[in-house]
Image 1 (cartoon, rainbow, N blue to C red):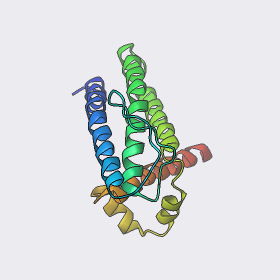
Image 2 (image 1 turned 90 degrees about the horizontal axis):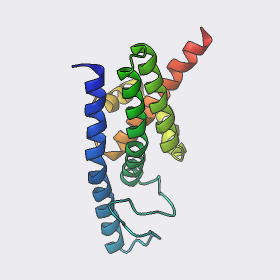
Image 3 (image 1 turned 60 degrees about the vertical axis):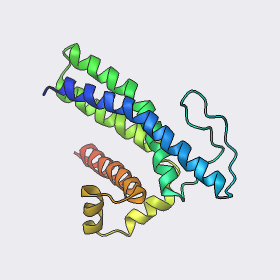
Length: 163
C-alpha cells in the first residue's frame, strides 16, 4: 500500500472518529450533569463539541477526549496538505519529516495544560513507559502515551540539532 493511500486512510479514520469522540464527550458531560457536577458549557450544535469554559486536566478521560477532538480537527487539513505534496511528486522523506513535525506541533498545542502529567513521566521507569507505549490501559495511559510520543520527538529533534 502506498504512503498516499495510508495517509488517506488515516485521514478518513480521523473524519469518522471525530463524531464518535464528540458523542462520547457529550455523554460524559451529560453523566457529569446528572452527578451534580456543574460546568458552564455552551450548546451542542450540529455535532460540534460543547464550548467548555475550562477543561479539567486532572480528569484524564475528559482531557484525552478533548485533546483527541482537537487533534482530529487540526490533523485533517495537515494530512490533506501532505497528501497533495506527495501527489505533486515532492520528496517522500522530506514530506514525511514535515508531516511528523506538523503532528508534533499539533500534539504539543493540544497537550499544553498537562504539567502534572508531564511531571508524572519523570517518575515512571523505562519499563512502565514501555508498557504504556505498547499497551495503554485507559485514558490516563492514553494521555501519558501522547506525552511520551511528544517527549521522544523532542529528544530526537534535540539530538539532530546537536549534530
